[in-house]
Amino acid sequence: MRDSRFDGGAGVLPFTVPKKQKRPETEIHATIVRDAKIRLGCADLAPDFTLHAVHDPRANWDVRSARHVDDWATNCAQAFKEAVARARRKFDISWPHPTRSKRRRVNRR
Image 1 (cartoon, rainbow, N blue to C red):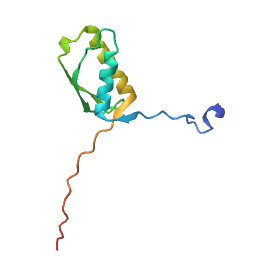
Image 2 (cartoon, rainbow, N blue to C red; image 1 turned 90 degrees about the horizontal axis):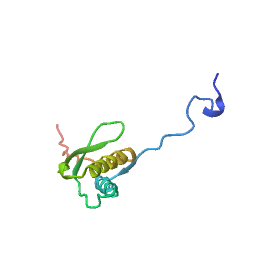
Image 3 (cartoon, rainbow, N blue to C red; image 1 turned 120 degrees about the horizontal axis):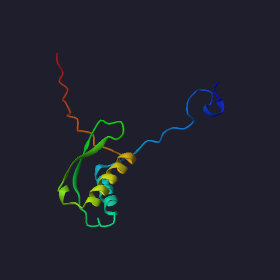
Image 4 (spheres, rainbow, N blue to C red; image 1 turned 30 degrees about the vertical axis):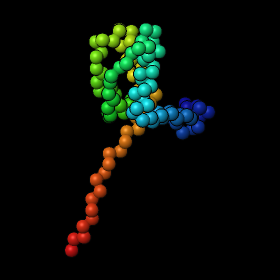
């Protein structure tokens, strides 16, 4: 037997899951760098990485590549990994729409 006090009698949860905030790629990139630098001993970390679009239900982006990772201290690499995971949970990238080619209409008779 169902208790309709909690679901309004419709079997649906009374709250909605909030959508992720959409941010530009550059802003998310800067957030990851800033968050990774907070870790003790990582203030001079300057990660060189790129983001790319993915079709994943958890996030619409991921890190494509990170360069010179072998030069990072272990705790800084872990801080970077955690910063990326946090940003993927919180934000989606508002990717620019590809420019659509404008076709000229030709009147065919």
